[in-house]
Amino acid sequence: MLTTSPRSLLIDRLRARIPRRYHYPLRQLSYEIRALRYRGNRVWCPWCQKSFRSFIQYGSPILLHLNTFCPRCGAFERHRLLWLYWTSQTRIQTTPCNFLHVAPEYMLQKTFRAICRTRYVSLDYCSSLAMLHADLTALPLPNDQFDIILCSHVLEHIPADRQAMAELYRVLRPGGQAFLLVPVDWTRAVSLEDPHVVDPVERARIFGQHDHVRLYGRDYIDRLSEAGFQVCVDAYAATLDAAVVARYGINVREKIIIGRKPETS
Image 1 (tube, rainbow, N blue to C red):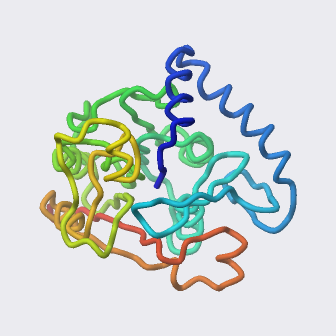
Image 2 (image 1 turned 180 degrees about the vertical axis):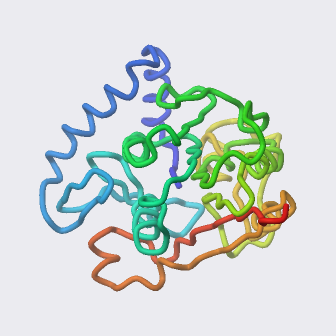
């Protein structure tokens, strides 16, 4: 969950002046330089296969947990948790599957393209990383196409989130799984949203980030169910050994939210 400072807003404005094709090369170069300042062996990022003296930490005024991200590849604690989950609880990395990656992260896309080869598709509205540019509320994809969907921290940015959920359900194959991670305040029964809040500073104050349009509560599960998903909320992080938690920088309160499409749908 990212907060927004005047500095980050300034960076966003400067980034808007740079041609989009240069964004990720410049970002990766800055990450490589930053990683030198974090050299060490206390923590490990499985996505870039590097160790560091620590991950970079910052908190959120809205949600209680800390986000910790990799100095070199930018992978967050949720990404490292997914790596642990997928490698120990699933066969995603060894079983051929059609994989849809929404809003692809650089290092995750690099890994999945190597694993899935031609079966991997990444999608975003405008990111230069994505293989396909499309609106998540109106996907130009046939029904029942993908065995696995990863949509991590995307839906909180989309006003018509229910329509996006319905589209993700439509393109998921019967029996397939969608990993639908969002920041959730589990103490809140009903999601907090107000379409009249459009100012970035106000959005950061109310929803936790300048480009979020809501803060999900426990009714996020109900929204997914209404779209057709059979929802599983897996507290896998809470089962991890303390040494693993420390080594990978895991938030034990993080939950993995999985939506399955029934075989008979």
